[in-house]
Amino acid sequence: MSRDTSSQVGQPLLKEGDPAPDFTLPTHNEGELNLAWYQGRQNVVLAFYPGDFTPVCSAQIPAYQDVLERFEQLNTKVLGISVDSLAVHDAWAKSMGGLAYPLMSDFYPHGEVAKKYGVFDEKWGVAQRVVFLIDKKGIIRYIERTMFSDLPSNDELFRRIEALEE
Image 1 (spheres, rainbow, N blue to C red):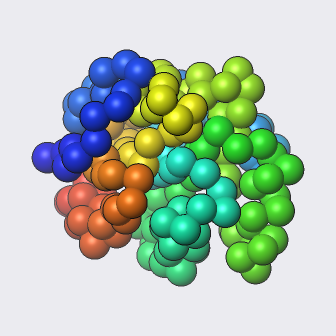
Image 2: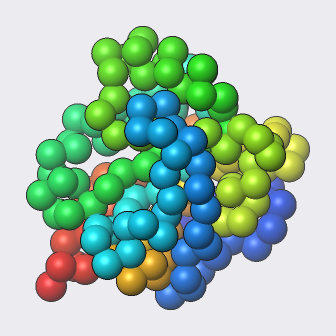
């Protein structure tokens, strides 16, 4: 079940059970990555967030780093996505002491991937705070969409990932 507490979206939000739209984006630390590459290999957490150097994002993004080993034990790749540029991603990651998982830049064309997922906020020109769990078959299995000021629940995310492995 998705938690939907936000309303300003450019396109309809995808639903659990939908195939995850494929995309390729540059990252701050791993070159270009393609979502389809993970099919048959790993589950993927796509963590869309509004912007680097913002207070809530500065809590959300490092929180994934803090539990990255647990994601890896569950064969799950974490990908952070915002409309910030690679230079900003790199500076932000360095300011936090580094991140071992990729921050993807949906900078140009501006917000194209966020629009594909229905999470681009037209009013503010940023991605909303939405977390997607995509299984190894490329199917969306969980969506948590929160207000800009709220953090998504890592506890619920891990519960959903563990349920995929059963």
